Length: 365
Ligand code: GDP
Image 1: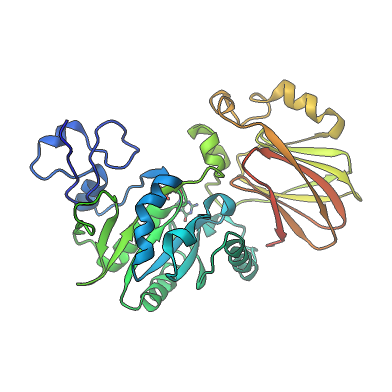
Image 2 (image 1 turned 90 degrees about the horizontal axis):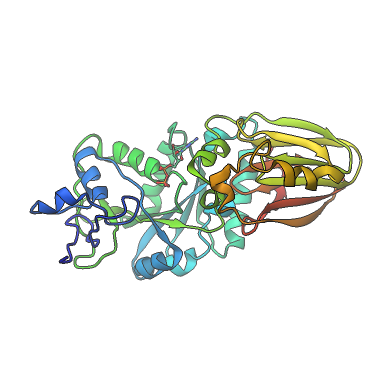
């Protein structure tokens, strides 16, 4: 087959995989100006669709951002901060200023302390190796925080281009679609190939005569639990409305299972409450620590679900981490799943799929 490039974004067109970059249905190859499906939808429906690619491919593609003078907006999912923070961001963007945008605020309980959340996001970014100019908390579905953010983007960009980067599933498309509505209204968005002759797959949405908002493909981050479970299970673990905390009074030597995807053993400490913030649909089971291994062996995929059968086939084994917590109210964070808030001097052991690392932070609530 001769090589055809999309007239919109310049990417090499393919007809095999609808989820990958450059997809277009076979029938549209006959058109004179071939557009990939992503550009087609943007052109005709003013709607951005997400495509994904691996970190390595992405790195190769987007290092060009480094050499440009631009503002970078990094969208992350506040429900999966570890999984959605792009570790290689500094290599990608060089010295360009970064705004960190925590999306899906609507899922957190109203009592969440936003100042602490911002501080935590800032320090998580620092740990990942990059400095951010400012942190914003938004809900792109509900529109919360969007007006303020658009004003600040306009301020920080200093008439330069704006690159939107994020891993898959953080809500980047929902976010950009809202930006398009706000900045361009219902008018048709014109896409142009910003890097003529290249295969970058960037989509450019003009902001004015000279500058543009540029959507980059979503990066696949292997720390996202989303990659290890079926679509059906992803629906169960992803909250679809504000999380209602569930409280368990535990004695030491008791265990909580979060479905069968993660587990918390209370090893040592006074009897106390464990406040669990997970999707309301994810079931939590309490058992004695001495029975926990057998329960897991016998009931994984059945009573302890998700994982369902499909996820079980690709889920890495659970690995453990020990935490000793002293006094201060602390959240034990299971990335992509939720967190457990505890207080007092206790020792716990966490179990999570290999690669999806549990961390602790000062409590947000
Ligand atoms: P992308 O892969 O980063 O482009 O993400 P999408 O925009 O496709 O969104 C991924 C999922 O997150 C979808 O199920 C969205 O409905 C959901 N989502 C996006 N933004 C929000 C938000 O602000 N709040 C909530 N609760 N869900 C969101």
